[in-house]
Image (cartoon, rainbow, N blue to C red):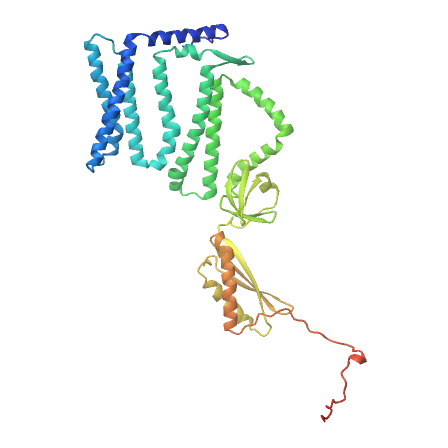
Length: 442
């Protein structure tokens, strides 16, 4: 059972009391001897470890990873046991030596687990979670073991730092709140990485569904972690309801756009009308959707400029999505002279487009005789490609191929022409009917 909250002068007295306990403890000769022997054991174990590894490398015998990482704690434990036996034979207590030996065993287990994880899953995949999740947890546990043997941590944690209304904020609540927030975001990243690299590839879902699952799982974990953090701080659900009521008033006056974008982001994630990788046209700007988050969407234009667009615009404005069906349609318009055979031109266009390697067979290309133009017979070619990067390049290739095919088959691509009919001409413009005779040359 936790002690009651200590505030005011009682808190200062508790801190001074714990400080006096620490000084008294460290001044005892038995404690000083054990501290010195522990440091000596660490120095000897480290020196022996470096010497053994150096000798093995000089003999061109690279030690196994498990041996190189676990050698130091094993030697330190062996020396600790030997020194403890010496103290026992001299009649000295060995409580501190036993406690430090337990920490060395913990250190050995920690190194063994990390080594096995690196071996099974790879160093690049494990390192972020080793540093952000496993190592902080081990450090906190070691500090709790060391300080718990000297101080009354429950009493120190119950000291009141300040108050917020009727809520007393103590050191334990602050520490629990901060650690909970830290581990919430770390675990959220861990779950996202696990889903992205292990779970979703096996489910074989599309990019939009994958992005929706990743985003909703992240925010769900964060929301759950924040509720736990608030509970550790001492707030109850009734207090949260009051805070939520106050926030709702603020949202009604000043945060309408943020809430609207947030809800639009959730709808886009489930509706999947816009997905990462889609080619969209927003206000005449053509680009690729890079990231779809809860509040905004990032679109990278053809000029390699990232444009951040609020999610609300994708639901309220007209947006062209060129790849929603999975493929991109290209279009080429070409005209030929009236002397050309339309059937031959249509056959030739279909042959040229079909022979291009990037043009999809399904859906197959289509060629239409669209109109009798003012100076040409107009045709329109539709084709489909898989990737946005192939769109403009394929259109350019096809125009070059069409031009060469028309040239080979003597099909003319005319420029605009007009027939001029003259109804009346002034006399001074009419040509003279008299024949022109050159004067003789003298």
